[in-house]
Length: 247
Ligand code: ADP
View (tube, rainbow, N blue to C red):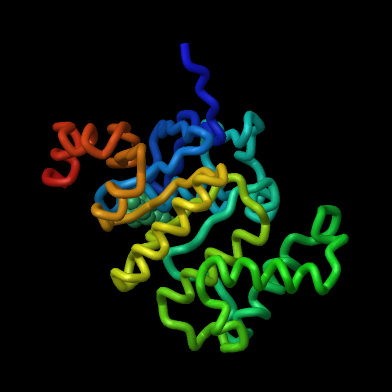
């Protein structure tokens, strides 16, 4: 039997907002080295699941493990430092700082007591420039981040989380509102990082993007994963069709 090496294990988690059950006994395993797409109709719980995994939302019950250890009680910054990076639907960069200054903040955010505390300013700058180059926005390094296009801001946020050397990256609608050329560019960067061993969990409404990029697709409906498999498998699953058509 093949050994399943899960980097993240979500086990029967529930989360209610008042009487509204956003997640109900939701379970999901993310295999190390995979690119998993997370899809589902609006309001099905995708963002709440992302928030639960990254510590932005405290779950009511169940457990979430990262590399075997529970992170269900951990705070966002702790989870980030463990190696779970995430982007947001609305990017969380600092618009009044330059692109390069944003990268400096990303280093500071790592705090004391890790490899970054021994970084020299020169090393920090080199690493920041290397990542800006990787996402293709080096020429804008001295621009105020607020003056970047929407797509470029998403690329900056991507570089921002890469500075922490994450093991897994959760992307919240990376292709949303981004022009087609930049979407392809972004997909290539994800593939490149994937080849280097990174794991991805991606919420995205752009089905072409999901089907081209993700080997695994998980489908959410009413706070639960109702199907998981290849793109072709989930597309032909009757429960998935029901969820999208039946609301
Ligand atoms: P999705 O990301 O799939 O669109 P969400 O996780 O955003 O779904 O939402 C799942 C359900 O939980 C929705 O009914 C939404 O209105 C509700 N919800 C999400 N966050 C909150 C919140 N902070 N307070 C109250 N209800 C919320």
